[in-house]
Length: 352
Ligand code: KG4
Ligand code: ZN
Image (tube, rainbow, N blue to C red; front, side, top):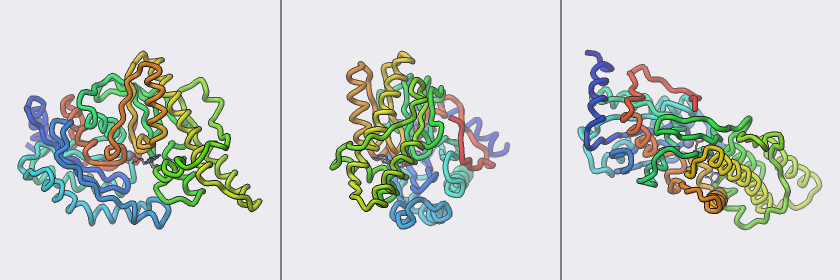
């Protein structure tokens, strides 16, 4: 029997096993992360080697640099993940890996590492979508959370409202027609001369500012669950350029606060409207922008007013991490999905 045929049987047998330990690899952008997750909810370790400092001097992620740094970091991250989890290689039941979406060169490092590991240890390899992974971060933070719920997915690459029908079944309710919201945060931060990544910088700076500027999001999408963030990004860029041309003061904190107020209002009102439309009283936020304090404050307030339960991952599981991939892989395994062969490759985009 070849590897894949052997793994089909092994994979199937995991469904009824009492305790399943998955080692999960994430390398889609600028974090090399490996985690050990038991039964989808219990994180035994979650080691993250961040490259933020390396990319900061370039003002954003340089794909080639990211790939090279994943290569140098990954085997140490692996050793550390086993050590922290206090397990041995032989205790692992399956290997999971993010195959997309993300930077292809960066993803390939994780994919090839995971493949070698799975083959060497004769274990099933599970191919996980990064987007589904972000949703699963909530299962780690909230042990009792189960679908169905509405998810507001807000990351550097995606902005969407999803009906999460079951662990592996999503329905797209609305999406951005141009930029992802994280992208808008990063671009606005850049024009304000803030460090990469821009989201946390704007979050921090906005706390000392007032929303004195009136920015707008697309009016034409007002009755839909779709989003557009390229217009507001341009409004901010134009404002900053105009002020500096006139030699006027640029109050960065006020601009950050005004921008953040406008986009978080748009995201939170549409998220709650989606819950009402779907007649679902559970809202979950996922992805890096889910770390935004003002967004969480607004969502929590609006949900409270509308009798909707609100869930968000703890901060360390909002941004990229291996644990969310391990959690997601567990529920894929339960449904017999995602078993990959050794020809698994990386994909820059994945279908929601
Ligand atoms: O989910 P993530 O780590 O990576 C992707 O899958 O894209 O999201 C990264 C994005 C970046 O755009 C970053 O600026 C944004 O999440 N972000 C934030 C905050 N923390 C991270 N945006 C707003 N407020 C934050 N606190
Ligand atoms: Zn991500």
